[in-house]
Image 1 (cartoon, rainbow, N blue to C red):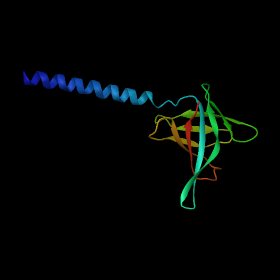
Image 2: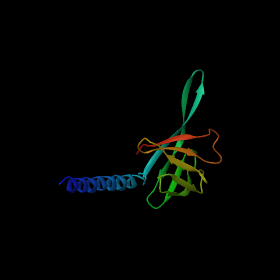
Image 3: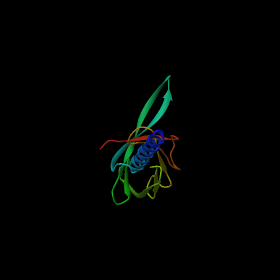
Image 4: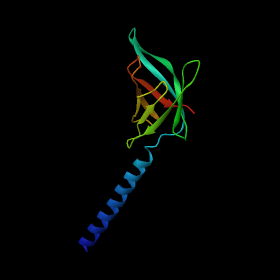
Length: 123
């Protein structure tokens, strides 16, 4: 009798682990929409958060960066961890690394003067 319950417990455990992995995989696709970005600067004993524009992810795999008078366009793709990789436009060769807060990323790209921006879904 004990052996029967052990097997059942193992099956239940595998079922829950399988569903956990599936639900984690569902969350790698970022939400489409507008992400506002800020840079943090330490000055005078406190942090200042400086707005740095925004990027909008579109369902066709393109993005629009709005932070200048004229918007900049490019493409993006998503890796297996949910990180964004940009090609073309102002964010060219940049990566937005998914962080542990929902719909938030740390963004770095070659021409960034502030080391890293924090970007989060606003729409």
